[in-house]
Amino acid sequence: MNKIISIIRKYFYTAAFITGCCFVYGCENDPKKVYDMTRRITEVEEAKNIEGYLSQEGMMKAKLTAPVMLRVLADSTYVEFPKTLHVDFYNDSTKIETWLDCKYGKYHELSDKVYLRDSVVVINMKGDTLRAPELWWDQKAKLFYTDSVAEYHGIGKHIFGGKGLVATQDMSEVTFRMPTGPVQIAKDGTLQK
Image 1 (cartoon, one colour):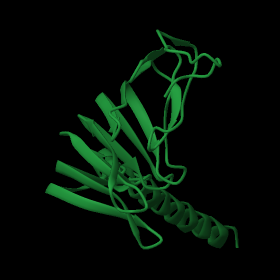
Image 2 (cartoon, helix red, strand yellow):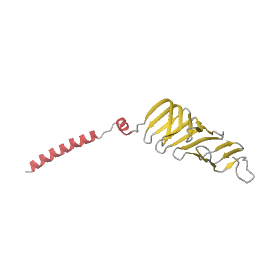
Image 3 (cartoon, helix red, strand yellow):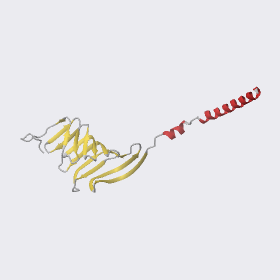
Image 4 (cartoon, one colour):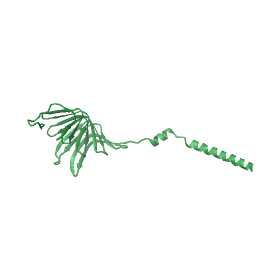
């Protein structure tokens, strides 16, 4: 009986050893295979000579033109305009009320906001001009805003904002944070338009 138990133990230990070797061999990972399985994949779609339109409630609100557009499919999908961007904004009568030019734009699809940078210029039909090194455009709220320096030039107005601004899309209302510069004031104390 002891001999049978000894033989069973011998086979058991041999089987356990062989099984253990299989597990050790099976757990070996090729670093390249692990990297390929876990890396994040970003896909980029490219289009050239873009002309796009934005409409809300059946009304055309903006026309965008750009020489190159990149749509980046990643964790957070975005559209990039790396080689200039021009946008014409329309009023309810579908007449251009404001236009915008910059050297770079990035549209964040989830938030409906566009980040603009490098020589951002916004001009309305009255000739009022807003310049900033970077600016955000909130499509839903129809606002431009920035936390960086900005300048606004209009008839009798030259305002420089050291800590940013918020402006309506048609630039009928512009609010600066910590403004500096000459402004003409009417006799009643209000800002002349």
